[in-house]
Length: 256
Image (cartoon, rainbow, N blue to C red; front, side, top):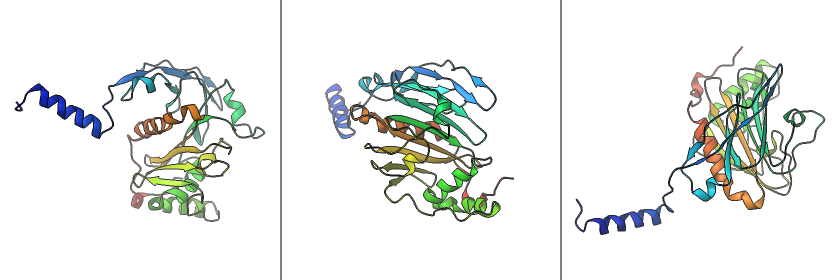
């Protein structure tokens, strides 16, 4: 036992808390099931248990975990509304402040989402989603650009852009994971899917997983009063998607 007993232990704990910004006890957020619409059928919202997180009680009180039966889940502000669409090329989950019909979001006649929203997608690299996967790989993941080149060659396409969107800020956390920020009123990775540009920035992350590889993508645009939750939302996305890293680039091949 340390000399000085409990008093020294308390002092060391206080120093650690100060150095690391405070220790947060594990707390939980409620699970919210989301309806999923597909090409053939609809799937009712699943039931789930509260999700444990190492965040403060105040932060947990402002969040919930949203998930459909066929998509990744995502943290989002509590009290928002969710819906999912599943197709041959992707799984998409959207969470908005107001009720919506997810089929409207993906209608070619509907404008992009202009307000606060969170979008989470899994794009399949071995189906019709391979074109979107190839474009983002070419822009974001240099070690895997041979996949993009193979797709372009196989389908007689021009080369995909080989650099990030010019105004995006990129922070790499490995060969298969990158966080990004798309500035206000700017086209970038944040507006790649169904969020349109407006006067707020979009933050998020892109991640390659599995052997195809597939692309996981999150876009987060929150009102100013909830902006502090964005890093927590993105961190949980990275946690959920990190189970299966992408295949090493030297082993890539274009699926037939």
